[in-house]
Image (cartoon, rainbow, N blue to C red; front, side):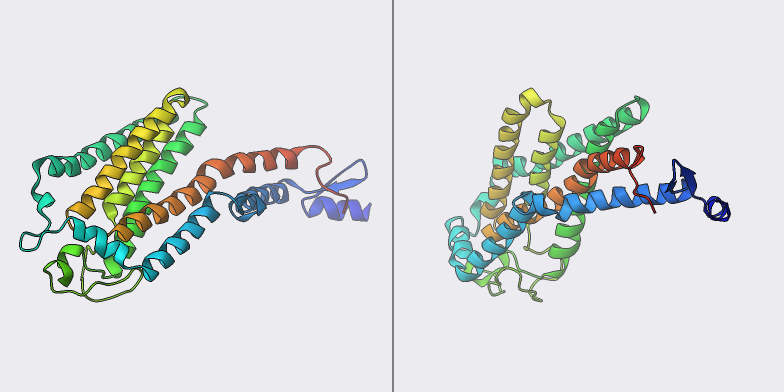
Amino acid sequence: MADIGANLGSGDWVSGGIARPGPVRLRLRRAANRASARLRLLVGAPCVHGPISISLAAIVTVSLIFLAIPGLDTGLSGLFHQAGAGFTLAQSPMLKALRKSSDIVQVLLTLTVLAGLAWSFLAAGRSATARRCGFLLAALAIGPGLVVNGVLKAWWGRPRPIQVDLYGGDAPYQPVWKISDWCQSNCSFVSGEASASLWIVLAVVVLTPARWRLPAGLSAGAYALCLSVNRIAFGGHFLSDVVLSWLISALVFTVLYRLMVAAPGAARRARSRSARPGAYAPV
């Protein structure tokens, strides 16, 4: 009787000879299960060959390629440069309109996401929609916003092609990942517009109904490719700026998706298992 009283006093309860956690301890254990499920989903064995690992491996591989063969950067940019005239395509009205269109498309998609988020709060049973819309907003803010523009472009100091001496500027060519003082702000590494263009593809794929997802995604991908190559043609970015921007953004997006969209489902399943009778072993 004394042992039973001690268990009851500590917040535990006894049923069928098995001591079970009390309400407070049960809530803490469920919270721990949810956190553990998210962590396992992010870094567990199923991710070894998943998008996160692939993105990391691609970033390392592509970086090594551009470090070993800098001519990939300078050679492609040189195709768009004319001695004495500079990057002449930067004056093309059609290409200028293409570049400006990305701002309009991004705003329209962002408004669509916000509308979807608002609708999910007003309509019952729309938690999946809320998670996906929240994921898209977080992907935009953290990928193109924080990682690309807030950290890499602000601190790495890589001069743009138009600033490099090979194309009439004053700065020497700087390889990828090298921090320099040849550019003070809004620099070349990596491309903010390439990152934003990948977010456009992501938003289109997530927001489009399943039956139209493939053609919509392919169309958005072609549009994003044109936007990104346009920046190289303008002398605003090297090829490595664009490709690494895509890959770094893809890494951010896949991590956020796993945490915000995929992991909550695993956490709910873990919570359901923990709530079943007999889920806890005798103590």
